[in-house]
Length: 626
Image (cartoon, rainbow, N blue to C red):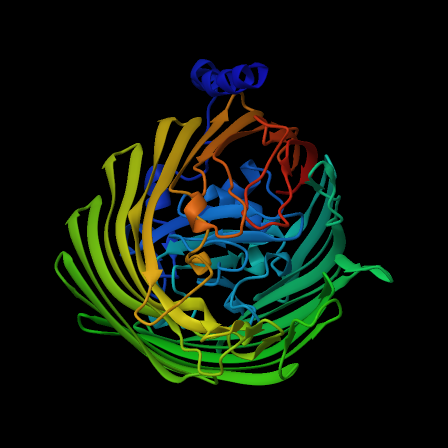
């Protein structure tokens, strides 16, 4: 009751204080937010208000005001994502269902054009995504297929993390954060290079203590550090970007002789952009990415080389984007604890693609047609089409619809797994999705913005576990599941004053999966994911005085239906609250006190049997230059 009273007071205080304060705490008005440029929908800059897709944008101010330190925690702010914390190291994150640590393999994550993807299980290793959040310009969260532009595995959504150019991160910035079982420190410095260049360098370190499982320490604590840089240059030949990161983390090993594992990696990316005319622009990008991890008794590592080129041009009523790319990666997998292995333990794969998208605008109506041809080492050539229709009803309202196809390409686990009781299939085929969407985005009043999307997803060839005829074992991996998901995504912002903004959003999800004809799947539809039927998120960002900000966040997540989790655990419904009070000591110095998960001392979020409890936490943070 005391905590509820505190939250209630936090929600009411702005109503008393707003008239006494001046200035815009959010820096961006409702109209400004609508005019924010996004690139995830069309691979070219366009206003968020004009993007015919379900897109939620987290800007740098959202990240700062909520005191998050990792990308995974920042994504809790996006109402069109379901975020489940598995333990101190791992998260399960998905859009529009099919979530779970093992089943969340239909979401593509891109950091400044670099794809973050595990070829072993087809999902995302969130522990490898550690950009310095002070340098993040925005995170574009697209729910729905993006295969035409982004390729395979952009099935249920795309998360595009975009960092600021070096010339916008000049001078010194840093932060020190300490909380219950958590410490974080970072420093960044930027400067000029000649008349047209800029650079920044950064370093960060963290230490996370063990979480709890059944009242005891789970042995999942980890610590590490990362360094990185970015340079940007403008010249007669165009704009050049060169950036890279290197990290070394100590993670749980679960090998008695060596209880601490490791996660090491580095990446280097170069991009050249040149304007050929006021209606044509060419971009070429190359990157290298490598990591190696020893964790939970398994050694895995991947080295990736990628090159992409694209050209944007305008021809009358047509805005074209054409491009092509090639990716090659080598991987290694060894298991020290049990006979769960991949055969061969080392493999090299490649992926090539070419795409075209045409945006045709006539008056208030825009038609977008796109097609990608993608060839992978597992199943050969795949076609990924997309069609969208947008109608500008008024200056402040957009209606749009879309029909798209996307696939999840087979992972190494699907095709190369060897285990005494389970056998992979070398002929495992891509999981396929056909998606139908209908959306609205607008500003019904000067201080209100609203976005809503209805969706229907039709899945074919979803992974199943098929018993051997007559003998049951070995179980073979197949494409024996099919089904549908449908639901609503909606969110909006309300500026009650220049000093107080309320943001709210939520999703509903229904799904129906069954065995396809001929399937004898025994997984109880586990690949269909572990998803709540609905979730709600409310944020209040306010300025109490000229130097004090108050931020309150409430969320409610429905329970995971028992029939969807097979031998997994049920995640009960839960409600939580976060509160943060910030004192801006000066233009550059901020001191904040924050509490997270205030309504419960601890609660579970995931359905995996190894899950731990997410605990109530308090932290103090000192920031300079952010």
